[in-house]
Length: 299
Image (cartoon, rainbow, N blue to C red; front, side, top):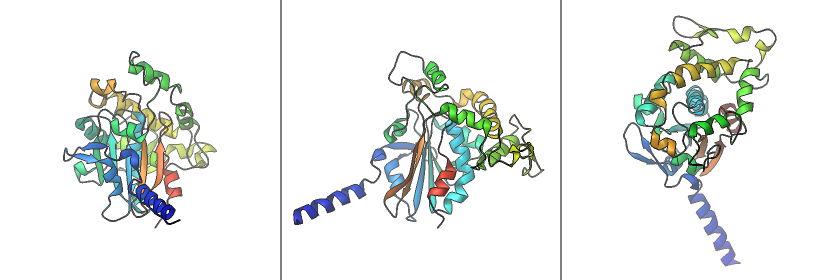
């Protein structure tokens, strides 16, 4: 009986000490300091003993990376109310591409005095260790990565892509996504097109949301075409316009980052446990931050 108790206690201690094993010993590079950061330690060490959020992003020109950065920018104040006071984002790109993306979306990173630790992992090793999807035919070394990506746009190896894209057009009457308006306003302030969905005052604040003026559906929590318009803005004036600066390098393409998806995890340091975990099931199918707010109560 005593032996059984000792074994149980030992197992419990080992489980506690490796509460998030997938990223133990896996590192990314700080853009600010150029030092390697152990992501397992980053998640599990918090001076305030609260929660840490880590986004495992994709390459800098990708829809998922852009939307993670836009959502994180908007939701930081609400996440803080839930005891999440340490934030990190890993992008599968070089430092200059990471800096370009966070500047385009106004994400407050440590490189500019902000609170999000900006890290890079050009070949995507951290994401794969975390267990993100690697896309269609990831083991096929002969097929062009761009052809693989094209297939993923139709759901191959990424089943949630079409539902996520179509959802951007039809809207949702039940669940609000206020980050969309914020991200679109940032784009308009930076002269991105389309720019006719919102009206801003001289201070850059939103005074009219044209999608709210649509008959009947304008009263929905997420109006039809609203997210699709933001994604068009992202595609035209972030991804395509800045492709040379944001695109993955040849060595990264060989490692499969063009089709690799992302994810995120929130770790409660006080409880030594994961309280939220997400792996993208498709392009544009990133974590719903409203689900995070619903799952983690305000302190």
